[in-house]
Length: 358
Image 1: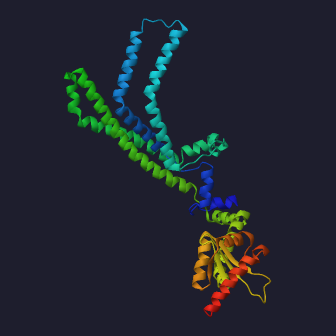
Image 2: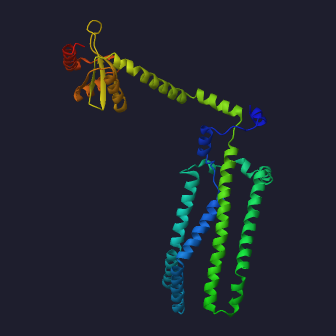
Image 3: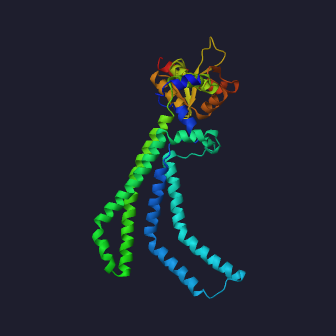
């Protein structure tokens, strides 16, 4: 069967079960390019918006160590004090960046794959360390695509730098006669300009890569016609699927019979809307009243609708409706402890019919 499937072309879109199984194994569409580019974008934004804060903290750290440069670190107390001070400043400097990168990584992955946790992808597989398989991947169409992506990124970065420098070349020439403070400020501006343009171009490429990865993932999961047939047969033989289909068929059958059950009833006892029980009693044939249909919520409302449509009396009696619903199934006799209550309801209904000549 495996050889037969290999000979066939995978022309069929993956079924929902195939996609679900792949997801359980951690096999989902994910673009590493868009994750890395967005992390670089967030890093740049954080550095740009916290530049003054970083500069002040670094200046303070440098000043502190220069002031205390004459204090030897030959004692544990002095060494621990210096280490604690460095760690404190480092934590203050890196916390905004680390939080931003962590949130970005989580959001990007959730946006691409949804909430997914699978350990199956971490299990070692022989084909991953097989040199022959690695060479096949390297010289496959996917390897060619990765090569093109790498060359495209190099080309984009080179072009952005070239056109930016060419467009600003006149400003660069005057740097030699510009005061050092102004030169440093302008240098920072042009570095930020080049970086922002590079990241914008790479972001466009990463979006294209994400679309390609989604296409390639769907293509990899395509199935042959035989695989689709085999999966359908397997689902047909699954006891859980059979039971589920049987339950659906029974619910449809009961829905079709509900109108007939209500039509053959003498009265519908309600709660008034949460429960509804349709009763029928024929003294010549039945030993006791019979529950023809019962239901909660939506089914109860449906029973009431049929009762109005067929002019079946509706009696609101919450205690009796709840008791009937809990103690008797459909097409069963009313339990003896409810005979008196049901008899009074039926007597009232018969009286109404007699008065209206029904």
